[in-house]
Image (cartoon, rainbow, N blue to C red; front, side, top):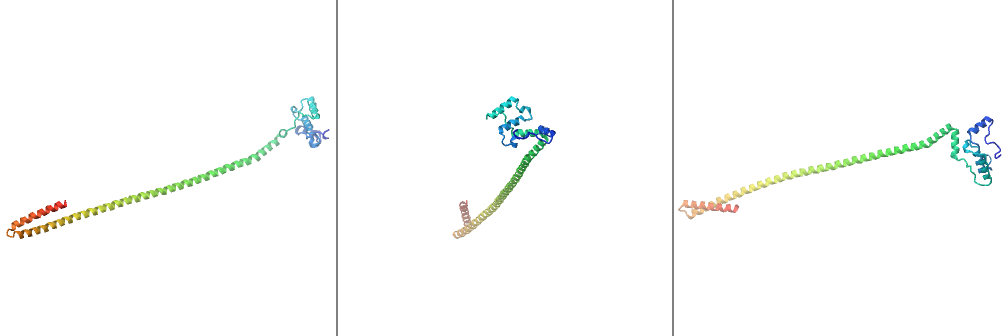
Length: 237
């Protein structure tokens, strides 16, 4: 009455029965757009395959039709997309399983590949960071080795300078001791020369004073030389 054709239509009664068992009825508004949406909802509720989803009694159907005619909200609710999808999956489980696997593969495979790619990038970044850290460590080791070499060279040069200083100091001290000894020798020679000269002068003077007594002159000369030697010792020491 609403669409001009039955909800299930096939070439023979067997195919019609298979449609009743396996297919959902065609919504009336797809066949006749003038059919009100609430009336379409009431009709589809009457055609539900599960008895629990139909009206519980004819009185409830009449009451819902009365509410529709009076312009009041009806009790029946249109089937949601999720419910239609679930019904279709129950009627065709094999096809639904294949579609589900295909959907999961289409969505999950790119995500899985993206995850693998991200992990690969992280591993590559970690390897790169490790290489950089290894190069920095080797550079630090090389710099430390250079600094240690400089310290060792400086210490070696300091030891050589210390040895050279000791050698020069010993040589200078030896030369100084030699000079001191030479000065002492020269002083002693000068003293001896002066003593001899003084003795000669005293002898000559004594002879001149006592020409008649050479023995006395000699004694005077010896005493004068002894006095002169004593004076030199006092002056030197």
